[in-house]
Structures are given as C-alpha cells and as structure tokens.
Image: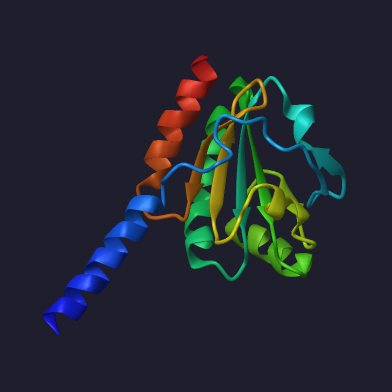
Length: 165
C-alpha cells in the first residue's frame, strides 16, 4: 500500500513538474493562423507582429480554463495599451457554449473559434489549457501546459520581460 501511494505521489509530482515544462515550439516562429472571432471578424496572428501575444487554448468543459480566464483578462486589460495582446482560442465543437462562457465570465480579450482543431494541432495542444507566449518578432518564447493557481505570476513576469525587449 505504501509503495502504491508513493508511486502515485511520484507520478503527480512528475506531472506537476512538467506542466510548466518547455515545448518543442519554443524558439521557433509561431505558426500563423486565421480564425473567426467572437466579434464575427477573422483575426490573423501575423497581424499582431510587433506586439507580445499570448495565445490561450481553452474549452468550456475545462475547469482550470474557467479559473484562469478572469486572471488572463486582468493581464490583458492591464497591458493591452503597451503592446500586449491576448487571443483566446476555443476548441469546442459548438461556439455557442463558448460565447455563453465568455459572457458569463465577462472577459474582454478576443476569443477565436477552432472547432476543426486545425490551429490546436499546429501548436501541439493535447490537453487544456495551453498558454503560448509569442515575442514581438513572432517567435514562440514560452509554452505552458495546464493551469494551477499561481501560474499567472509566471505569466506576468514573462509578459513584462517580453514587453521590455
């Protein structure tokens, strides 16, 4: 029984340690994409070149996503005027559920719909949420898998550092 509990504990520790681990995308050009947004217009990542961009992949069924979104919205509101943009990429099959959730949570950042999961595949998204930080030159600098309270502090530090570059 002790060995089983120890094994389970080690497994959770390993998963937690890798949740903020790097991805194969770091240091590469961010794959460009265009998706329809919650405002009805198509938005293209490359149109944000020159700004620091956070891409947050999320789903309505994801509890950590729901917890993280208001915190990301605060970050967006705080730094939007100095060259920071946030694109929320929803992967639900039905965008109506996503629209309900963003209204319920009161988020202001643009939400894009990836129902076909094409963009999610470009970014190797396998679990929710995934947060990608892209620098002003369009290169992926940081990739975060999952969300736990406190990750927003790391996001804040990384966004500030990228804005200073």
